[in-house]
Amino acid sequence: MQRTMKHYTPEEKDFIKQHQHRNPAELMLQAGRYPQLPVSELVKQIQARQKATDKLPTWAAHPDVVFPTTLSVEQTSSEATAAYKASLVKGKLLVDLTGGFGVDSFFFAKHFEQVVHVEQNSGLSEIAAYNFKLLGAANINAVNTTAEDFLQGFTGHADVLYLDPARRGDRQEKVHLLQDCEPDVLQLLPLLFEKADAVLLKTSPMLDIELALEQLGAVAQVWVIALHNECKEVLYMLQPQAATNPERHAINLLPDGSSQVLTFTKEREEQTIVSFADPKAYLYEPNAAILKAGAYRSLASQFGLYKLHPNSHLYTSDQLIPGFPGRSFACQGVGRYHKKEILARLPQRKANITVRNFPESVADIRKKTGIKEGGADYLFFTTDMHQKPIVVYCRKVTGPSG
Image (cartoon, one colour):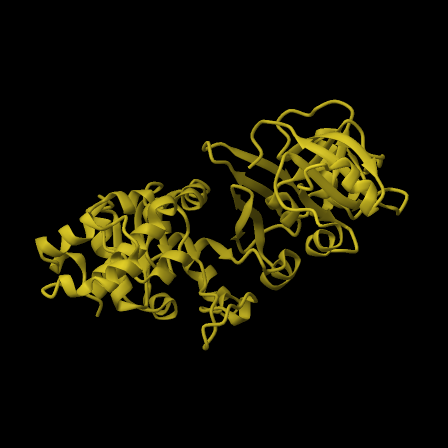
């Protein structure tokens, strides 16, 4: 079992505190200076704390919190996504069947009278339980067992069962399909519905939403969550009598603590009529959550925008649309994909390049044109409504972009 912080000596704790901002590799090279200390183990704690500084500030700020392997820290939810996820549910009892380091359980505990943290790894279960006490989460009960064994022995009834199945295979390769993850939620569904009113499932953003909906079959709502415009997770609320046209929410959590939210259904998305136009005064690029959720027509309709092309997912307008959920740009001009023409507009030979519905990659374009990354110019290589490849020259509009 992994040694926990409660057994560390004051000298060992002091070593972590004094060196928490040092380069771990350099510390290991200097291990000979501290023959009385388990430097290798302490450096692992320092590495994990450094990784957690921005992702898990509550844990990183507490001097006595114990961290597991850096892989466990990398795989856990961030505080921002965990807090948002926890705000979606409330009740008397939630069981986190894939507890891990315990970040999700900690935030769920703010909305439930009781939370059970189920974790099959004994060392990780012990660390989570120890940290819960340190952080004042007295209403979490840590249980060291598998999700399957817990469910078989659970005679109560939960308001919500939460699962974040492990997405690594036997050889530690990344997997995304529900049936390849552990536990296999598709096999467990009948038992899950027997033990709870609702099941909240977290999946990889790489999993196709339509495939997941088809396989799960009883989805009431879907949330696609991006953090600072990087898609992090997709959540499915499962209920036995769920409708066949669940609401979908595209959420982008911004650095200032606010969020961009767009809600739609697939049925409304398919029925929405969209108008097309050549680039006007402003160009818009949706945030990552909207792109993953597939709210292409709904976005245009809700914000009164034109699309450049059915498959380009770039939008335009004559007047600046405040509060657009993504990045907004002022158009400086439109041109052909022609090296001399492009370079004539870029005396510094620098630009930020994005491709949308275009036959070449960013790397290909940079190689052909010699354009370096950076600067104030933004170039969008895309296809217009006339099926022609174009380059849209832009400058970013200041304001929240995610």
